[in-house]
Amino acid sequence: MPNLIPDSAERFSKFAEFYDRVRPSPPEELADLLRQWSGVADPAVVDIGCGTGLSATIWPEVTGVEPSPEMRAVAARRGIHVVDGTAEKTGLPDDCADIVTVSHALHWFDAALAFPEIARIMRPGAVLAAFDFDWPPAVDPEVDAAYRAFEAAHTTLEAERGLRPGFAPKSEHVARLRQSGLFRHVNEVCLHMKETGGAARFVDFAASQGGVVALLEQGVSEDVLGLTRLREVAERRMAGGRTWWWTCRARLAVR
Image 1 (cartoon, rainbow, N blue to C red):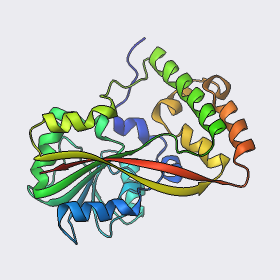
Image 2: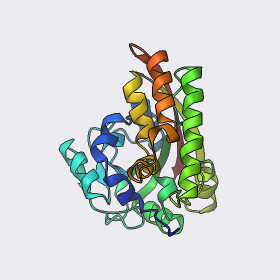
Image 3: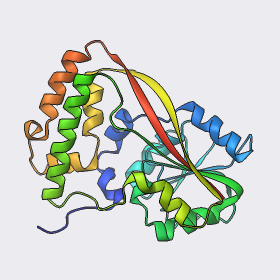
Image 4: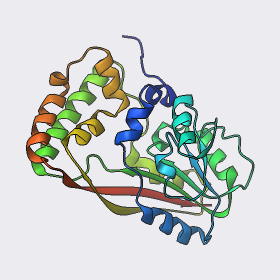
């Protein structure tokens, strides 16, 4: 079967509005941490791969970099200044950022090109924060088990149909940043956040992945994907809404 994997911009452009509605924003404490690490109270912030701007909501002012026109349109409606660019070619000037953030996107980057480009726009002492939420949020053991079964089903099908991206595992982010030789200090910090949500959003959140959307477009049923089972369990265990316990894993690199 030919390789059907689109690039990251194309992969998520088809459902920008849906993505924006169900994905979480980062914890407010992340902004406090990054101000402290950078030593700048009013930092110039660049958010690379900003998507719909959810990851920029913790900042009063930010420059977003995003290759997808659909994603940029949503971010612009949110009031974010967003430019057409990529991690490998941001189009931004040298030494323009005190803080650079990358949310759920570092694994898509060509590290050989992106890391030097990110370092170029960072001022001396600036901080890069590449962060992801651990999936899924902790809600309930039965919901978690149903999610894990869904995850196993869709990742297997993606691989079988040539839809599984070949990016580096997120567990290697810290090592790759250190090995680049571009940053004087790299570490990983975990922050925690609570939300309240119901079954419908939990299932939509599970379905808001590029590979899942692609499989559904190819006609794979929700039963086969495990979404039907996940919905049944979530509706039974999350009636009326439950607390979602998130872990935000941030890899910090200082220029």
